[in-house]
Image: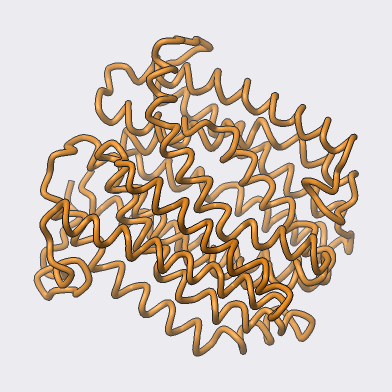
Length: 425
């Protein structure tokens, strides 16, 4: 499938994901209030963090290794599935033990009951995340996008029924979140089976190679995840669950917009992995389009973000507007950084990526911790943006030098870029 066609399919899917995500946020904010919304936000961040920390980078390895040699797809998929089940069960057990001993470490002010319900979703989260790379490597973009969209759509449907129609509360909303994750994981398993005939096999030597590659991607992913997600947890610990709920709205809007560049970047990964010695021309074109598109998105957020929050989320969440404004430069920088990161991941992930990501996390912490005391929930937003700007600066300079490309070739959209787009194949 041509890259442009894959992007078009993905953008169509994200065109649905964005309103679905915003609608879910509005419903949970309106019907649960800042505290209930804060509980859901903590669990969502915990879900992403656990899956990322526990994956050992295997989600990226599956795409990388299958894209390079598709004849080993069945063996790789079998190893990925076995690892996903094992890692998911281990992570759930570990969280349960920590929750019984010292729950504040992982969930702050959130009731332990919610954590115990949430643990059911962990193995299915691992299955979905690790198997997703199989579709990406085979460039099956319809399956890749529809299966990613399914849990979001189910969550929205469940929230409408449980919160709006039945008038139930936070406990039932958490059950909805867990149910959508479980169903999504099961559907992933079924559809991958139809794509690749796999089994429960564990090839130790192959897994070792996959972990050796994935561990670098793993570390980078953790650092970048922590830059924004850690800030929400810091707010929970220092300011409480209500402020966490307010901040989560700003973060949710950023996350929804970020879906577009992050997914487009992800499609670039297997393309580069198939031919790691290419000139970088495709990546440069993707960057130019991304600069133009994200500039429009970011200006729209700055002009309409505050009124949008006031109208759709209500006055209780009006405090999310200022953090959203400060997160916007970070959104722009992270979007472009993600394009470069996925290109470099396809080229073996040079060590500069790990160093830049670690530096971004340190910059974020250096600003976010004192910023909380000085500026409240605005402080972490400023910290995230500065960290992502630092990351983009380093990656952009490295990519320009390695590929021998001028800045204008990466950042300025050309008329020929638009006229060259085709969707055949």
